[in-house]
Image 1 (cartoon, chains in turn cyan, red):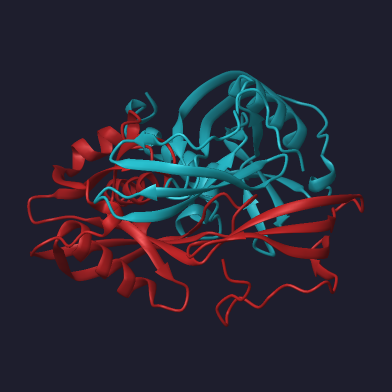
Image 2: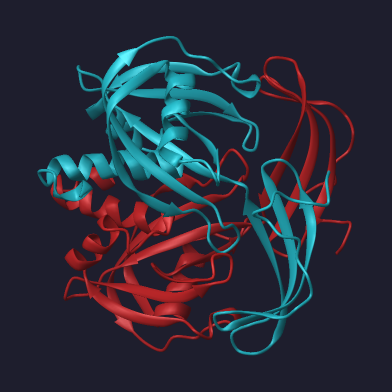
Length: 203
Length: 203
């Protein structure tokens, strides 16, 4: 584990920093790996009382893609999630370095996990995940006009399986809890809302 | 920082553990505070190759509440999010210890942040946030038939402000990105879908 981060992640120092009504008095790196850096901060809280704050910094931006083919089927991938010890059905997704274009990253993830390329891309929004603990940011996309090719999986994805499921059935799985990955749910609900309100919802 | 966790969080040992197609060879606690524990694991990945995995374990279940009053207004709270250094408009939410009833926790958070109690509670689903890195689980609720009282804020929430905003305007803020907190977005989209599909969406 290196003590120096990428250029966009300067090492912390002990100059106090105002963060809105908070004040950071000290910061140290408690843990890091290629995907995360965990900071342990000593702070003054908004009411002025002393406290601590553990911040999980994500090195990557999350990208997630609703890919819909000409038969109104959605690409879903299942993989065993190590953190939960559960198999999870989700949209194709991945992490993109913060200095890379998230759309290019989303296009790569869709190609790698679902083996498709798309002509038409539409942004579905930018989300913050778990913002009481992490600084994770996610970009959501809708991909249509697909050309099929071959999936190319990473070492951590060797168990990944792919299915193309009719959109209405995918929404059923969202609403009854079979799909529970937050980003997949947001992106799919957003497309469903957009259809029900004649396009105004994904502006 | 204590080396011993609550009874429901046994200390790791070095017995290899099968986690689906993954194999955990070693586990150590890299960091912990009252809200988090970060594990650093040595693993064999699904294709058999060696790797590492950093798991951010959340000690609490997240709860989030769509509270709607008799004038179809939704309780929104704004607070400066330390992790992002941004002020964020969100639904009332909080963390509930894993051994506590999440509904009781949601009722407490709604009372503390919005100063209201609700007679009618409906579960809106169970989500996983950022499941490539964390094991965080969230429970979503719809609260109606409200009685107004006084908010009671925690030390970290002294800057919190509360507004009651018409439901349709809240959905506009979701769709145009002014509300970007993932759990708030999921819960609000779900209620909007439920209304558009005559109640079938929140079954």
